[in-house]
Image (cartoon, rainbow, N blue to C red; front, side, top):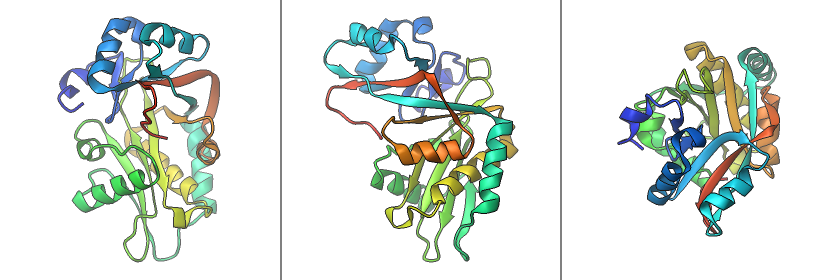
Length: 247
């Protein structure tokens, strides 16, 4: 992904997702090319595709050796997201004495903590150069407990070309809450915080998030920050049968 960045940054049909190629317009680049990426990388993500008929199309293109996991797509405009997120930050507080930071260039210690928490909660972690903003603008909100433990994390990246179909959009994801701190609203806080802080810095117009259909806590979390599910869209993964990439 790092080696491809020089041409990906100019692409309106593919985005650098850090961990995986994000195909925005498979018809435009050609299904043979998409298959090449799957063969070389092991997986791709087809971002916010029309839900109807896509799975049948993928089965026809890739055959029975592949699975096609789906994530629901949540998209909303900045004014709605900010209104909901600012309300959360006004109503909820991190524990007294904790620090809540939005990192743009995390150091090695912070990177390790972010990636370790993602791994511990079943989320495929973003690579260091991606989290540091070396590849695309990146923001990661982190609440640190008294003892220096990272209690939760949520990330926003500006991964889409301004002339792609997601021009002006940012992506929110890689959200994790340590098991010991679940049930306290911390997921809402850290998501709201990264959305507000990233919009202040980037002035993005819309935000996109992806949630697995059975991941009820994550759905409630993004919806509390104003993101609405578009039932006509789904993000599809293409991955070898029996392999799990991320929740």
